[in-house]
Every structure is written in C-alpha cells, then in structure tokens.
Length: 218
Image (cartoon, rainbow, N blue to C red; front, side, top):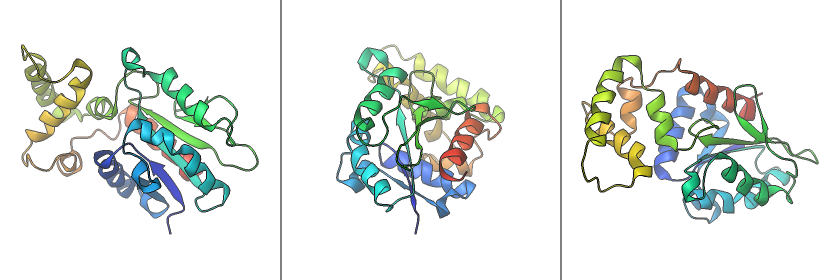
C-alpha cells in the first residue's frame, strides 16, 4: 500500500504527476490524489480546505508522509507566493504545524510538525518564488531542442489581437497550444514524456525532484 500522499489541484495535474512519480520511482510509496478523494473540490482552495483532514490521517498513521503542489497564481487575484503560504499556515497552525514555513536548500518548502508529525511538504508552482502556475513551470523546463518551436508557439499565441483568454491564463494557452501542435495532437501532457519535450537537467526540474526526495524518501 502507498503510505504517502501527494495532493494536487485537479485531474490534469494528477495525471501529470502520476507520470512523473512513475518515471522516478516514487509511485511505489506515493499516491497522487486530488481533494475529491477527501470529499473536497478539485481546486486550489479545495486543496487548502482538506489539509486538516489529511493531517488527521497523518496523526492516525493511515498515511506516513504528506506533500501538496498548488499554484501560486497572482497577487492581483489574491494569490502570489506569500499569500498562498499564509493561507496554508492559517489552515494548519492549530493542527500540529504551528511554525512558519521553512525552505530546503533547493528552494522547496515545508512546514515542521510537532508531536512526531512529519514535515508537510509544499511546492508552490512554478518555483516557490514567482507568481504563476503549473504551466509556467512546464514551459520553463522545455528541452533546448524544442525551445525554438516553443518560441514560435509563444509568439503566435501572444500576438493574437483580441484573445478570449485572460492574461493570467496566457501560460495555459501557450502550453496547451504547444502540446496540441506536437506529432500526436491529442496526447496532451503525455507528449511531454513521449516526445522528450522536458529538460530533466534544468534547475527547476532538479529542484522539484530534490524536494520530492526530501519529503517522501529521506
């Protein structure tokens, strides 16, 4: 049985990180789930709302380790790194995690538990520093051999005179167009792995991998 949980915002994130966990061997120990498995809604707020339920599973030893991956989003919409981390802290400070967040050397974030509770791992997309979301992280780790094509996609999307998507969703529009213009347009996130679009040596990729090891393996 997988004794650790990585909670993400929704089904597409779940698919992506299940593939990532399988690729790096985390799948043996780590189950990737969304808030709906706890009875919540599959959104960023849904992740925040089920944290106390997940902590109870840690306290009862039903699960042994816990991490979450959520989007920073944008300050103008009430998001941003510090606002997001404050929301997390307010949810967990009276439930075994009273201290402010800390950072690993690789920029990964965690909250220290008390009374033998393990570290609660937090990765705020894209890089625990900037505003944005999962798609910004995906675009940042584009393989060098693919960068020229992605640049063309980006130029095409950003040159639309009257886009129907909001500016804050530009990275989503670019990433989905990028994947839709691959050899197999219907493969979506799967193309990232099948077509070799990811640069596994990129610092943003290595930092995420180090954080996963810190939270779930070491």
